[in-house]
Image (cartoon, rainbow, N blue to C red; front, side, top):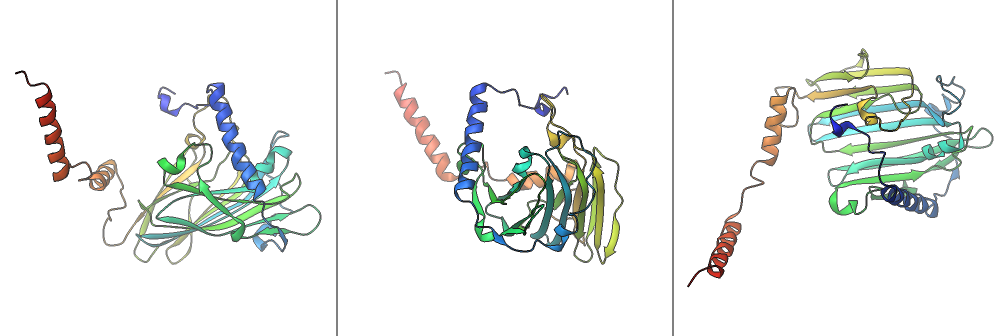
Length: 311
């Protein structure tokens, strides 16, 4: 790639790598210390439906496969969108235990994660369940001082017994006040995906426009009044490599924009001109100096002039 902004920063100085590893270990230790109290409970039907499903094509180095993924987006208004997320993984190797830790990022204020639940269906024995009250919220991991420089936070939950041969899954609801009326569906990942679903519910009179990146267009099927669904199956993994471009620039994905009935809103754009207008209105006036600021600057300039005055 000619643009260095798209280069992977994997080749960092050892000290930086060590620092990131230490921060990640601190996060994981915190999760272990605050280990959830798993209870015996039946996993939901959508998880049990994939227990005996054939695995997507994979090799012996694959740590886990994504058996089922579902994102159900309900656009209630220009100021409120609710998304239900469901995922189920089968752990194949010890390094796949990382998929037993759920991370959901969100903006605060303006967005929240509700009803986070996790389950484990072991190869033998009863199901395990962890509930929303066991989840923990915190700042972004691996970024020192992120609580001071970013309004993005993370809610995470540890699912017990994420061991090879077991199936782990989770579900949560993302409720947000969107900055823009746009969403993305990433159906390809760094592990194989058996099936991935995306559904969209729009208010009456609204329309959508979908664009696909790094993958041929997937046709939508209309399943109700102003409701559509997309499905992708048997997706190959994109295995990480040293100095590769960012994963989000390689994976298959759909970008979908929502258009309110009766004309464009201030949170939607269909071309670069509309996006420029949106950004201009967003930051308009924020750089203007106040009257107090102007008086303060004038005073400082006067004092500096007095210091350098030649008698």
